[in-house]
Amino acid sequence: MSKTILVTGPDLDPAASQVVADHGYQTVHTPAYADSAVISEFMRKTGAVGIVSRMGRVDAEVMDASPQLKVISKHGVGVDNIDIQAAAARGIPVLVATGANAVSVAEHAIALLLAAVKRILPLDSGLRAGRWEKPGFSGREIAGSTMGLMGMGAIAQATGRIGKGLGLKLIGYDPYAPDSAFEALGATRCATFEDMLTQTHILSLHCPLTDKTRGILNADALARMPAGGYVINTARGGLIDEAALVASIQSGHLAGAGLDTFAVEPPAPDHPFFAVPEIILTPHIGGVTRQAGARVGVDAVRGIFQILDGQLIAPERIINRKLLEASQASLASVEK
Image 1 (spheres, rainbow, N blue to C red):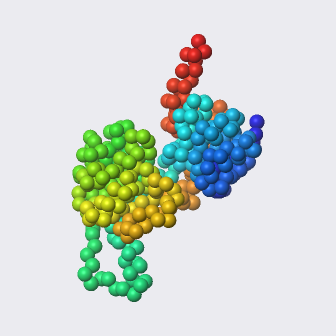
Image 2 (tube, rainbow, N blue to C red; image 1 turned 135 degrees about the horizontal axis):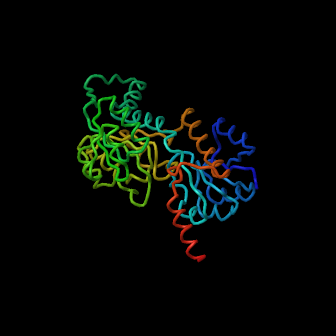
Image 3 (cartoon, rainbow, N blue to C red; image 1 turned 180 degrees about the vertical axis):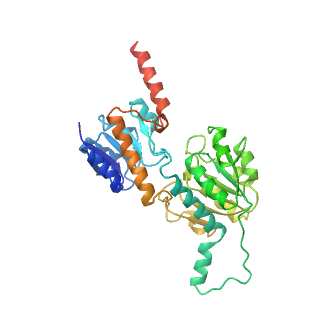
């Protein structure tokens, strides 16, 4: 068996690399945002038995090119770049590093919020251009506003805790989270996404991208938010109808947005977001801090070795666990 772990991306924290070395393995890296064909070729050449998924799509093509593949471990929690159904059909568990980057992403969500609401970037640009824009300026205080959390996972909870410290009232919607998650945060649970929107001055997205959530923040949803609201997205760009968001801001209904992620990454040079100064943009780096990188990287590779060594692993870390169980049950039924 090959002693190689493939990392789909050019970087892995030194602490994680050390864990790999301590197990007698080596890492091989693909270029950033390699396509399936390139990743497949790397798998064929290296015989890697595990993948740390960072950039690029790990789909059925990749899995079929690497019958030796035993486990895929996401460097984070968003698995929309991994075909988890194809993995389950081939008996490959897909792991996530739950909560490891929560603090970093939450801090970035709040940074985007403050930059957008306080108009930091245009004021900075104006001052550097020789304009003193204090006369006639009227800012906005966020204390007392309501923050709606779409999702109630570790990142949403960390964001809520910081927001609460800034004086924000918290509400949220997550049909899968227990009541205890809302209670621990002091957030009011909303019965529906639409109900939450009507009360939300600042919407912060923290849910996975699925067939059900793709484009969930569309023109109708945005229209339900109170006038002058903001959208913050550190989750997945595909949650938002991007054209609808631009239209809502340009019409004056929403005041702005802070976005760390896009439907297609990297976005095209002529993406409409670039022409809207009320939108603050960053290149999907909310969780890219030294501290989070170490935690996520170590969690990702440790999970791989737990699977390879036949050790127990927390069930919630196997994102396709139910699909695996269903696939195994189906196979057993056929064999009978």
